[in-house]
Length: 164
Image 1: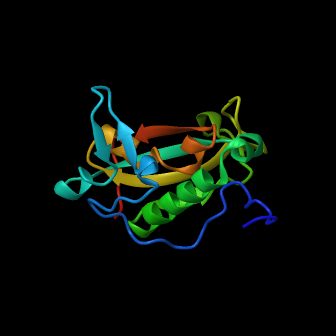
Image 2: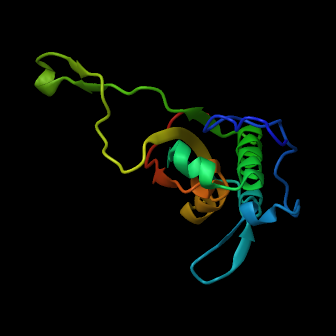
């Protein structure tokens, strides 16, 4: 919309329809990724064929400057991609202010109101996603705002996870 203010970094767009195999649109670029062999795959196609899923933690890094440098239509498509991931069960959140907690040898808790990690870009958000493989996890985050808007997303496989 001309003259409209840009959404805040990490803001959500209207809820789009869920990801489906073959659900391609003019924004399909954001739902595709190219693996190391050059083969393009739809972000959800592999996932819908497998019954065993692993859990992955994702950490999105990005800043307002990178977000503003990204074309509005790409930002909108990336937010729609996030909405579809959430509708399909991903647990997502925008990062708040972190604290460090230590209790060395059980001798007393110390709390420091600051991040432990250091990065060129600030942490923008976190997600817990289900995917069959690390390649499928890559496909799921490749169209998200941090991936598209000059940021980066780290994917951490959980070696052992409990819960749903």
